[in-house]
Amino acid sequence: MNYKPSVFNVEIPFNDRYIVYNTYSGALSLLDSPLADSSKEIHEDLVRQGFFVDKRLNETNRLLVERNRELYTSRIRYLHIEIAPTMNCQARCWYCFENTAKEKHTMSQAVVQDVIKNIIERIELSQCERLTLLFFGGEPLLATEQIMTIGSEIKKICLIKNIVFHSEIISNGLLFTEKTADKIIPAINLTNIQITLDGTRETHNRSKGIPCFESVVDNIVRNAEKTKISIRLNVSSKNYGEIDPLVDHLLCKKGLDGKVRIYLARVDDLDSCGLPGEGCLDNFSFVDFRDQFMRRAMKKYKSFDPNDLLPDIKRNYCGYEKISQILIGPEGELYRCQRTLADKKNAIGDIYNGSFYREEELSLLRTLPEECTAPCNLLPTCFGGCPNERRKGRPLSYCELKKKQIEKDITTYVETIISD
Image (cartoon, rainbow, N blue to C red; front, side, top):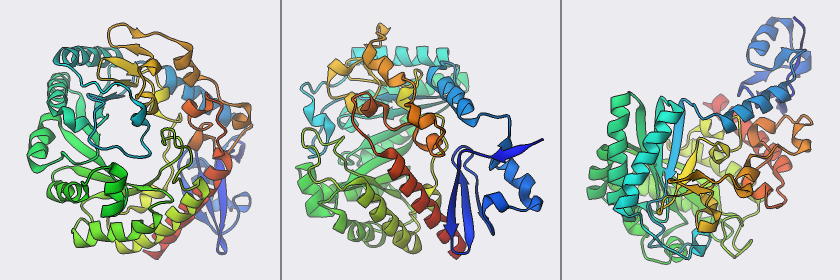
């Protein structure tokens, strides 16, 4: 069989050697010579890893077929459903897109029962083997009763149908007390809760608009060994100088090292609710900041896993492109994206009538820009960028940014692994 180099190879000079990474297969190797000059002795291994492929294969077309399958297939092994049981929240984060929400509804018990019926229908349609419910909002723990009812009922159904089931929550952490954790974790099989911190005490409290830092951190400490807790550290131009002392406070002073997962996320002007660019760290500065931070953190703490630096292997940009994945609002309305939840005008249907198949929804399922299928070796990592932003016509510099990010992340990963 005749072979050719994969179009999805990324090759990075590394000291006197070469890092090669394939964005389609996720394979990574460290070679003594450029890939094109690789020896016959390792050719079979390089083929197996996807660095060389059959000359007859059009890799871009294969990826696009797989993308379409991900987007349009109803019957899937893994079903992911997101639920916003309330749009109420104690905090008023300066960057939050939900600040535009004019109506702060909480899901009624009647809608709760209808949501349960809808989820059961989706389980039957998908014939899934695994199901995840993600509770979002607003602050979802303001609707703990609704979460408990939905989660416990779906847990029973999954047990009967032999479906692997778990729940996750995205929260500000203020209400994740010991009492709540002890009640909700077993009831809905809660395997992960994401809690966001916006800086050290004064900055976090100012960002949230309420004095809550100490309470949130105390809740994390008390519940860290009961379920997986992921701490999202929001990074902006206002707080990037506080990230190191904040991490030291959490992992050393509070004894959380190795008990929680911590990751950095950029606050961007896509989130900023009428305040475009205010306080935002530009994308390229964030990539540099994150790289330098991770180099320091991985040497010092257990809570940072080098594997988090490797790009996700996926077949479309995000779950919201898939017709099988949906976000259910507090009145039973359906959305395609968390960023559109704040306005019911963005709803693409409801649990009573299904999708309305309006242009607003179908525009998320559009074909990729021609420049993305040129081919491009980064296509499996970005798929043209956020479809919600692309349909608005907003320019996104994903190509150059993704290239820089991937090269930095992979180089840092290799350096870390070698040093260990």
